Image (cartoon, one colour):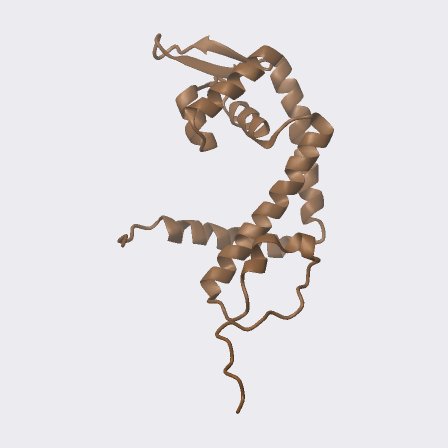
Length: 177
């Protein structure tokens, strides 16, 4: 009599070396497609993020949160209130305060009175901060181009469109259990 088959079958040999499998290693071919898609999205995002984090640390001695902070301020030349900066970065106010204190001490950011509300402060890049961030941003852009090099432009455009559709789909109202 044959032994019963397990509910989840082992996966065939991965296409990536073990050190790059990460989150996707949690899924097997018998898992439902939604789980596999979600894990693949996480794995791709984590792989790109790890590479960018490592390069920022090695080349500029900085962190991804610090880079993100500077990027938000670069998009808003008049500065942002700390609460808005916190929302854009999707982090707590305490995290933003800590980064602000560091960047003010480094001379990259300054606190200025908010013209709309005299009780509030805005933070904005200094000339030094703009110059330093421009160097990092240029390098960041070239790293992304390198990471996606060899991936066909048409495929990138299609992926971008499909991920946009997924974002809209996920944002639609639905009942929660």
